[in-house]
Image 1: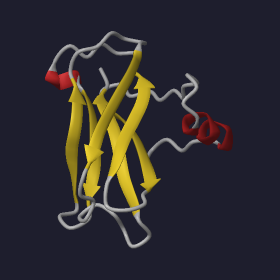
Image 2: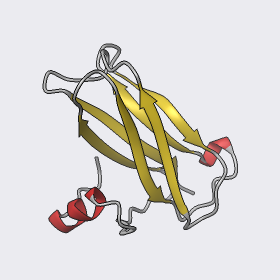
Image 3: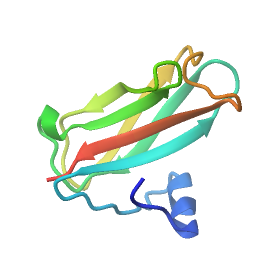
Image 4: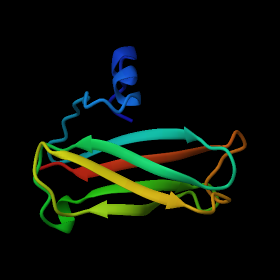
Length: 117
């Protein structure tokens, strides 16, 4: 990942309090990767954030993905292709079987991305 968070930014993204951490992506993908510890074999994956770009088509959609540890591929679990810049966006997906997604420590890897203009 190209952008590392400071300690303060890590604290900011953990709390769902409206505080945002900026990332620029001119002509490349803005990617936010996060990991979740899960108990059991199901969970709800949620990302709450904003984009300062319009996303009125599939080329500019915001995608939520989960990493499949068996295939070594990122799988899209949610996408949003309609939205207003600088407004809150929530992507959420109920994962009912995490067999292919958890590592040995019961951690799943997820990411949100959008192509910058």
